[in-house]
Length: 287
Image 1: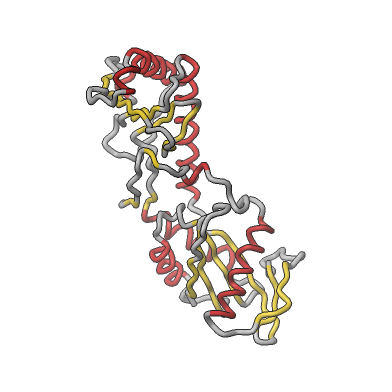
Image 2: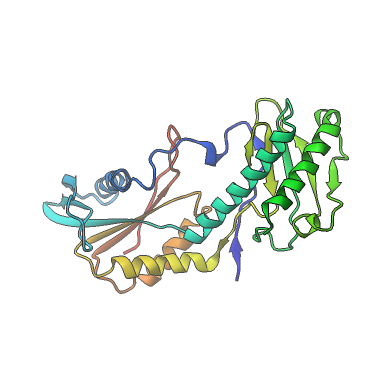
């Protein structure tokens, strides 16, 4: 099975995406529906030259009922709104985040330097998507070794010297990593990784991949859940970053899955869920 990944810089002048405040919490269904519906209304007016009026959230949307009801060209239409969620990806992302935060907290508890440092922990498995499994005692042992090496080599790190790759030198630890690299984060820059205090962890597995089959699986889940409903229009939305800019592939899969459907029209929308960000809304008609 193939996978889709992204190149990731170790640090940047701007905060990483996962640290930026969101426009809305995805769990707040009403806010998500209001945001998505407003942009669909704009698209229908500006791109398809429809008249749109009396747009409102439907308080009784159970049993595949419409989430939003509005008049399009004077005709009342029901709109169902649903999120395209890659649950396997999110699960792995949260696992990666939890482990990296735990390791960084253990390191910072022992030694928290005055400068920000990226710790690149090399993966023991050739597959970059394999999250290492070990008990907490093993990871605490790794954190202790890393903390000691940071403290011993702090002057070298500050001077950006080259010889800052260290083997773990322990057979048990080699099951989860052969070694690690230490790198100072320049002043006024932010680490791209998860961290605590001034320690940020880049483990070999944390550039989480999307398996190609995940897109197909989610499209089929939406079809099973939403097809046969009481609405004329289906709007599917997703965060662009979660799709790793694979919105076109997702649209094509959705088009194939929904080639026979009870909906008159289907739209796909993706965007960056970030507050105060110049948001580029990607909207396309699938059917």
